[in-house]
Image (tube, rainbow, N blue to C red; front, top):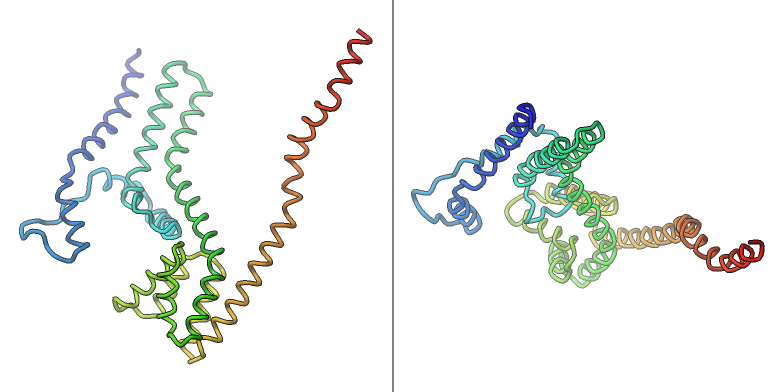
Length: 292
């Protein structure tokens, strides 16, 4: 190979090897001790100090704009903040995947140079760089759809609990303990925020920010207004539950009306051609044999 090709390979391989070495040389025992201390609230040792962040994470944070990092944090909040993909890991993973895509593109270009392979290399780099964002965004959309489906039933359960004599927070706790979906987890987190001393209004607003569902936002606003002006929470829950059931029925009717349009294109391009081949194929073969 030419010296220019070796230079291009060195420019990509050496930083990637350095980033991998920095990941492998992290004091993982110290990080595990710090995480256990933060989780349990007790110090594991008097001489253990905070470790410096990994070099890869520091470089990735410098390369990532602050507004883009805030947007990724918002997407992670909508996705429920998966344990396997925290924000620092996501920030450090994106440049690594981008470098891997660039390396594959350079390797393909060295095998057979051409303008098409340059476009493929650029596409691989961008696709692998934004692949974690697509996965997190898709997870958030599915989670918000699950919250939207679960919301009317949760409101009905809270209404029954409040009418039975319990308070609003006790009803939220009952709904969160008996439910197993993402909305139950968000209600439990809201109760935990209130228990650690966060104001109720801020806790409810944080719930609305984590759930990008219009029904949940309107419910949170109604609860805040009821708490501020002393309105009975049972009336608010009854009205919100009725509205949520009506919206769920309207959404189901809307999806049912859109179904014929969605079925039209598969019917035209997939089912009708096969049907015509099965019905008209033997006749066409007979005609070709007769006139042949």
